[in-house]
Image 1: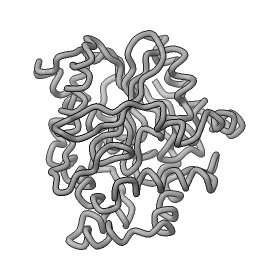
Image 2: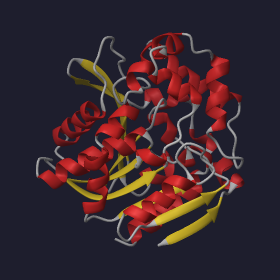
Image 3: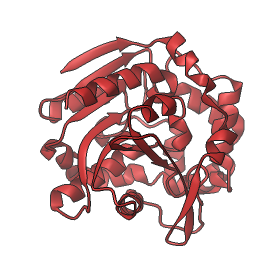
Length: 304
């Protein structure tokens, strides 16, 4: 199944006034994971829906969709370790598998038996690991459905930015600690499509989340996920191919990193691929065009 949707700028703009970054933080709660504080938010009623954010941002990415989703579902989100308002320990062996442990423990601790997953970017890899664990019979809950947003599901068609390559290099520590607001903003804007560019306040918020608790100092540790994707490629792609629950990919095809080529690869490798393409939308569809993403997700859930 393939659908193409043109981005709706006006609808996106209307979703901007849901609150500030301070509002987001004040509405959250912290819990402990391996002695580290993890930021989380929960709201709504209905079936549990877990949101998984990307790199190098945080759960704030979902704030424009939050009021729409919480009207329909019991929505739960956290900032993964090393991201956003959660702790950013140094030294620490950051990994996708460890983040999957975090989600597994959190969901299990809440007593949830069945959840739906909605994942972006880095969160897509965490979701693939959770899916592999479910197929192995080790996950203490059932994954009822999965919706992916732009992420490197297939590392062979991932096209990282130069700054990401540098962070992975032996110079990564210097690049990470020396990252300036100007360099961050220039690279971040390259990821976004033309439909709904971020304004000054948006960039202030993303930068604040990145630098909170000395976040710049660990970017070169977090970005090792790109190598993990290559190492675990067969396991994680195999999990997609063996999945029995409903899955959908919503792709911002203007994304230069994991956009149109990733969607094409998904159609090639995933049986009965369900793909919704968003024109003029880049790497952050839920931020750039929240109403279109919500509409695609609501339709996906209605089909189940």
